[in-house]
Length: 106
Image (tube, rainbow, N blue to C red):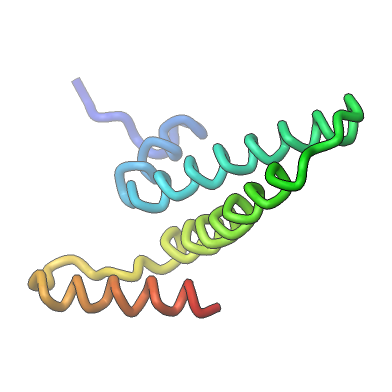
């Protein structure tokens, strides 16, 4: 049996993207889950007119930060992977720390 080609449609392209860059796809899933959580909170607040308590509003802040970091990381990883393959562990760890520090500082 022949292996499926990338020209078979969007499903094959999505599988190839997942296999090529699983970290980017995991970041995308986390960003989408956080976005769905915040969308649910906004639905209850704006559509159902349920007023959130001050603690609920404070608990949204980490979601806003995490969603923006994950989305930036997703598009960065898809277009330009931050960690090259074939490096030793120390170089990869150093690059990972620099990458995370830049993201948190931005």
